[in-house]
Amino acid sequence: MTDSTDARPLRFAVIGAGMAGILAAIKLTEAGYDDFTIYEKADRLGGTWRENTYPGIACDVPSHLYSYSFALNPNWSYKFSPGAEILAYFERIAREHDVERFVRFGTEITSCEWVDGKWHLIGADDEIDAVDVVIAATGVFDHPRMPDIPGLEDFAGPMFHTAQWDHSVSLDDKRVGVIGTGSSGIQVTGALAGKVPHFTLFQRTAQWIAPQDQIKFTAEEQAAFAEDPDKLLATHKQEDEGFSIFANAVVNAASPEMTLIEQMCKEHLETAVRDPELRERLRPDYRAACKRLVVSPEFYEAIQHPDAELVTEPIERIETGGVRTADGVLHELDVLVIATGFNTHDFMRPMEITGRDGMTLTKMWADRAKAYLSISIPDFPNLFMLNGPNGPVGNFSLIQVAEMQFDYILQLVERLQTGASAEISASHEALDAFEDERYEAAQHTIWASGCSSWYLDDRGIPAVWPFPFDRFRAEMKAPNLDHYDCR
Ligand code: NAP
Image (cartoon, rainbow, N blue to C red; front, side):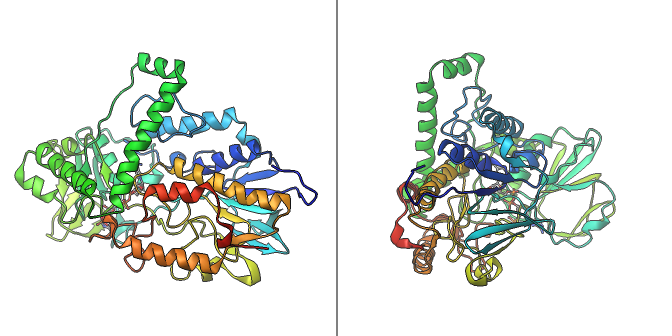
């Protein structure tokens, strides 16, 4: 924070106390800003890791990379650690940085309005704050999506979405069905198939599954990480380099690296699935990584268990006793798990946000969600998003992405603090040019190679960062002020 004659104190609101909200709190205080509140609708920190507690939940980004760079963790139990451990990590880091003193739990912001140079925040009908800067840390996987399947409400047994797991339901003596084969459904399958009396996976579209070199760290290895911060940092860097190769491969569908990833997935399927008939039913008819690549060390083994069944016949409807497929078969179930993903294009919504001159987010995003560099929206001054629309979300460490974004945002905030600008938002021209370039680049990515996925927007264009990851790093070093409307 810089002092100057025009310097002004800034009050911030951070919306959301998940990974990115905790990060924002730590970085704001480090930069000398301590006048802020984090608004969190739940009663606990943790965001998606608080909500998603389904059996088998883990992060398929290596834990030594899926960590804050300033709080590397020697104690990860696995190379890919389970969800509960990740949540505990965020809670510990928040505790160590005394983040909770800034959090107002149980407070959902329903709207934000820009009036006379301030953001007015409304929650439960009342104005609860007026701030200079809003940091939206609302996450990507915040809105569970229920499928539009006839009869869904008719199911007589317990039924829940993976992001709303009902742990009061014992599965010990139950026939369990799972609808959906994204990362969540595949992880649940790995955890439950063969462990419950009968397990049925309803697959609408087959998934490519990349193998995972899962490793359990020994106590000696953890101690070695704890004793030698350089070793910990080197591991973080090594994982980062590995991921950069992947990140650069997926944005160029014609790259040799992409071919290698495809070969790896094909080989996994060939070698891991013994029954040729099952293998063909599990074989996707599109290129690997077109949908977000699913990574699993155990899925193929689990689905081959004698008590597990893969159903590929389309679902016709849900009935009291189970799932009826188009061939007329009723698959009888006691518990039905919905693993059909999230409304990932909602971002800050359903918050109603009104920017300069009455421009609403609903109007601004009438076609689709867009933001300059995924951070800033024209005419929504002093509002910055972490992991906003069209950013690098596919199989990357969103922590790493949010850290880079926050350091970038802090440079814009410094202009506000020093009085160099009172209002900053991306210019319309910059957003339009960015969108044009993104549209063109997106068509060369693997995500546009012919499949349906949550990456795609209403035009079938991948709504994610389509450029090499190095470009993202370079863009995040410093804002180009020519691309901002600074007043
Ligand atoms: P998802 O990838 O969107 O997968 C949803 C699944 O539900 C798909 O298989 C889809 O089939 C199926 N589906 C949707 N509607 C259906 C319907 N009406 N009838 C039958 N099937 C239907 O959701 P997700 O698995 O929850 O994962 C979402 C994202 O969360 C991931 O891509 C990832 O970014 C993140 N995630 C990450 C991890 C991790 O380890 N880092 C773990 C879990 C989730 P179609 O393919 O046919 O559409």
